[in-house]
Amino acid sequence: MNGIHDMGGMHGFGPVEPGKNEPVFHSRWEGRVLGLSRACSVQGLFNIDESRHAIERMAPGDYLASSYYERWLDRNVRLLVEKGVITREELERRMAEVAAGRDPATPHKDPDLLARMMRGLTERPHYRQPGPPPRFKAGDHVVTRHDAPVGHTRLPRYARGKHGVIARSHGSYIFPDTNAHDGGHQAHPLYSVRFHAAELWGVSAESRAPVHIDLWERYLEAAPLER
Amino acid sequence: MSHHHHEPESVLSLRVRALESLLVEKKLVASEAVDRIVSAYEEDIGPHNGAKVVARAWVDPAYKQRLLADGTEAIEELGFGGVDLRVVENTPGVHNLVVCTLCSCYPHALIGLPPTWYKSFEYRSRAVREPRVVLREFGVELPESTEIRIWDSSAELRYLVLPERPAGTENLREAELAELVTRDAMIGVAVVQPPTPAAR
Image (cartoon, rainbow over all chains, first blue to last red; front, side, top):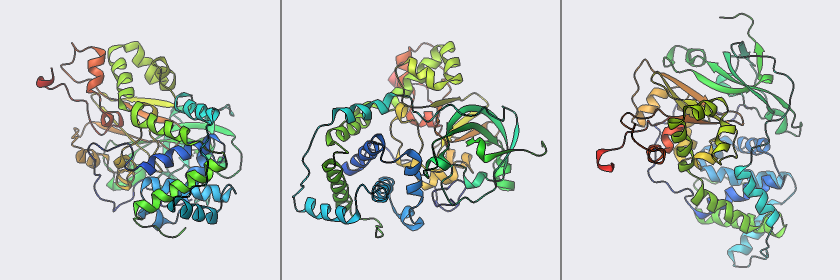
């Protein structure tokens, strides 16, 4: 989708402001949101691509006005409601109960969940999977798909319909465009594709500033003529 | 959900507590597990992990070769994991810069959770289009002849920059070298500085 999240190349946001001695979490609730998100993911309530797409589906004005972990919270609630795990009414009621000091939930331990969440910090991710043999090899010239898909995609808008060169083949990885939409988690070949700055930004491009983007084969066609 | 422009923190905090309460009640979450993940990120996982990888690559050329060829495997030799990793090397003519324009992809296992600026609209929008200007905002001025390679982390690989080893560090041991390596240098918005005379 052509969402507000797809920010590469946009103007108007101003200078980057590096903060000094920033805490890992600015408030306690930020850490809870991160931990809850990991738990939902480990419990199979939503996958990484559904999770990214849920943030992308925020209204653009809300996206821009929210902090990073506010977007995560919005995502968690949105997906848990859509998947029927909770309702918004239930959440509102629980907020009132918690505010009144009447939290009805009884704490419990879940050593298995804990172990699975901790393993996620050190285990190899499972996104790389066997897939079809790659069609391209390093040095091949390609053109990215020119399209405005309504669903989730990891082909950034600034790199659509552009000419690039395959820099490296990464093997096959689960394809986000289907995995975000119940379309299955089949793997497709993934490549590092190198783009000249001028191909992406035209005459205003900085010199000697190529961009590498990791792109699935499904986003790529062989370039008709090598330039 | 209603618009929540700069919602007061207490309301956000309450919503999060209510969400946790519901998920605990449904036995989908145990608060203790959330505690442990939070403390892992607050106390254990941070740039000191990535710094060890960088220092090892500086002192051991064979390790560096393995690291550049397959970062995922090479960091496992040092006991790290949890990430599909690609390491990109700075050299006298090439400087690497990592960004995620679409969200906030970042090698957590090696350098912790990303700082706010890395996730900011400013950095995400501009690092790909005007990297030299952005680097200048971080105080990094590179010669015009240096190629800046930008890595937009659009898939499930994470990128780590192997910075150049600073001059004058020939006599430092691996652990001392690791102390010089900063988070920002491993993202590519800083270069590693030689130790100051006072620190020696």
